[in-house]
Image (cartoon, rainbow over all chains, first blue to last red):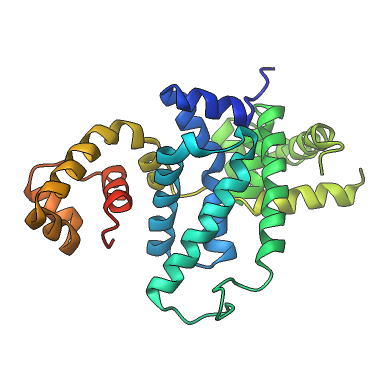
Length: 178
Length: 85
């Protein structure tokens, strides 16, 4: 099984103009940025889309300024957080946020959980197909056994046991990382 | 790890649903959009009337001038010029 590229490797390839690396970077962090926008800050869809695009635009424009290539994730988190606050400030939206910082309560804890979730996603990449597809469909897309079976041409009656086996495989991959 | 840990893994996976595909695609197209964005920004910096039209309605102004107005271009121009969405 091929090892997934590290964040630092992807950053290096992006700097050399590698489009595939950029696609990988966006693919790897799109869920994270999206989750910060809609779960942590509860932005409306149109605002979330603006922030999402602006985050990746800034990452693309300023990748050279990243001090440590390993610090990509915290940099993206900080950027997303700041742009969400700017968005709330610009919209003057009332909501369950601190009036001084415009940060929702428990933001640090929410982002810490999303960081843990990113570690699990990385483990999911590492276990490869078909497990990553089966677990993604079941947990992230909330698909039924039947829908998963139809999509992957597998008997629906085997999906539960496959999920269980894939979870065990993922658990092994994550040993010591969570 | 225990069964409880598997439950936790499931919970963590659920925290990261996929972003809308169109958003992801627009972000991935940023590198190709860059040349067009550079042209638009350069013109806006020299042409105040064009810049004002961009500020008033970015997408309409770009389309009227024959520029590509993909999501990637719109987002990048918005960021570079800090015009309203």
